[in-house]
Image 1: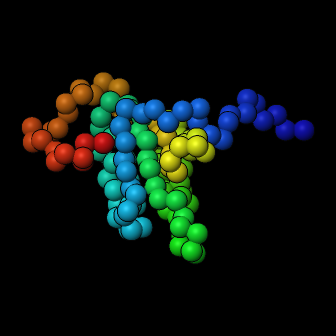
Image 2 (image 1 turned 180 degrees about the vertical axis):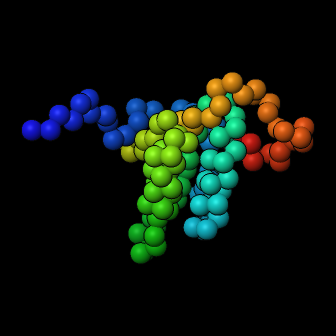
Amino acid sequence: MVDLGELKPLFRDNSEAEYELDLRGLDMPHAIASTERMLERNRFRTPRSVRILIDAPDGEGSTSHFQPIGRLLLDSRKEGILTGMSTLPPDDALGFHIVTTGKPDAEEDDSADGATEPEGENV
């Protein structure tokens, strides 16, 4: 018999996070691009938790972003970009809660050229 070690819950206990990335209302290419951009930015910042919100399927045959975004996040976790990943609680919005690996020694205001980022783009 295989020892599975300590089992972790499928859903996170709560949805609190330091930042939020709201992908609701975006089409698939834009949702994926926004997630990739957020992951890339956070490689050079202090570790942080991010709540990623996605649209629920509409019940009329449309596809959800859950699988493609989930796959992207799983691949990022395998690459060491994320230290934690879980789904949001069922009674909350559809999405994920992630914790980035970041650079623990990075300063909080770490824009390389001193330029400020547009509002809503600082995740």
